[in-house]
Length: 513
Image 1 (cartoon, rainbow, N blue to C red):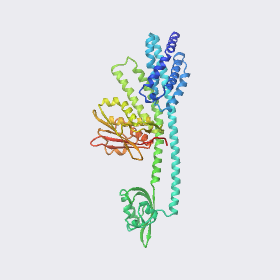
Image 2 (tube, helix red, strand yellow; image 1 turned 180 degrees about the horizontal axis):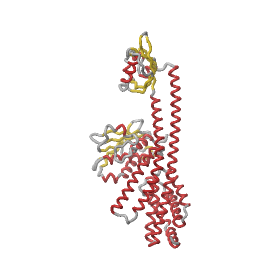
Image 3 (cartoon, rainbow, N blue to C red; image 1 turned 30 degrees about the vertical axis):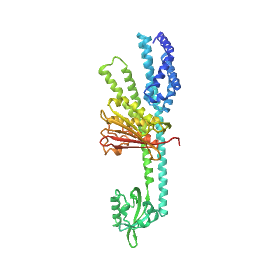
C-alpha cells in the first residue's frame, strides 16, 4: 500500500475506533455463544479494545507485537473460561464484518482493494496464530491430565498389590470363611462363612452347596467339584458368584483342597468375598482407558485440528468472494459444513478425555431446559416437532448445579431425540420430585422415534458406540459423565409402543458441601 493509503486507513480506524469497539462488544454479547453472552460487558470492552489496537498496529504500522501479546493473554483467559476454539475464532471474525462496510463507504478503487487484502492477511495471521497457541495450551492440559491418570493407575495398582498381600496373610493365619462339603452338602462351616451367605450355622449345615452358588456359576463350579471328589486334577483357586440367603449374587473366590473328613472323602475350602477387589480392578481399567484416550485425543488434536482450521479459514475466505456462485458456492458451503462437523467430533473427544470440574451455582433447571429448547428451536421447527412440557410444580425448585454443563448434557439428549424422530413427531419433557437418595429432581425426555434395539441398550453409554450415521458415540457418554459428576444418574429405557425415555435424576442440593 502507498503512504497515502496507509494514512487514509489510519485516519479511518482512528475516527471510528470507539464505534468499532462498541459494535464488536454488542455483537459478542448478543451472539449465539452462551459463554460470550454471559461475560461482563466491562471485560468484553477490555478484550475487544486490546484486539482492536493490535489489529491497528498490524494494519497501519506492520507491527505484530501488540497482537501477539493479545493472543497469548486471550488464549489463557478463554481456555480457563471453557470457550471452544471456534467461538474465539468467530469473535475475531466480527472485526471483518464491522470494518468492511466502513471501508466500502469511505475508500474506493485500488485503495479499497489493497486495504481489504491487508485486512484479510491480518485476520488470517491473527486467527491462525491464536488457533495454534490456544491448541498448544489445550494439548498441554490434556497431557497433564493423562500424566495424572497414569500416576493414579500406578498408585491404585500398588494399593491393589498391597491389599492382596495383606489379605492372603489374613486368610492363611486366621479362621475366615472355612467350609467342608461332603456328598454334595455342607457338613462344616465357621461363623465367617455363615455370615458371608446370610445364614445361621444351624441353617447352613446340611444344605446342598449348590444352593449357595448363583445359577450363572453353578455349571462351572459343579464340574470342578466333581473332578476334585473323583481325585482328578482341577483348579485349587477359582472365582464364582455366590448366592446369599436373600438371593443376591456376589463375586467370591474359593481356595479348595480334597481332604478326608470323618474317614470319608470331602472338599475343604477357604471362601472370601472379592467385591472390593473387583471394583478396584474395574477402576484401574477405567483409569487406564482414560489415560489412553487422553493420549489419543492429544495426538488427534495436534495432527488433525491445525490443518483443519487452516482449511476452514481459507474456505470461509473464499466464500466471501462474490465470483463464486451457483454450484461452486454450494460446494464450498458443503466443505465448511463438513469441517465444522469434524471439529465437533474432535471437541466431543476432547470433552470426554479432559477432567470435569463443576462450577456449582443456585439455579432453575426449568430455565436451563427452556434455554436448550430455544437453542434447538430451528431444528425442531424444521421437522415440525411438537414439544410437550409437564412440570410437577408451577415453579421447579431451585437447586445447586453447573448450568453450563447441564445445558451441554440436555442439548446432547435433545439432539438425539430430534435426530431420531420423523417429521411431525413428539418430544415430551417431564419433571418430578422423588425421594431417591434424599430429595431428587427427575427429568424425563421422551420421544416417539423408532427406539433403540434391545440388543444395543446395554452399550448406549459405552464410548464410541453409535448406530447413528455420522455419530461419534460420545454424546450420551458425556451426558452420563456430567450427571454423575453432580451425584446423579442417567437411565434409558424403551417407550411403548415406540421411542425411548431418557431419565436424569439429580440430587437437590441447596448449599455447597
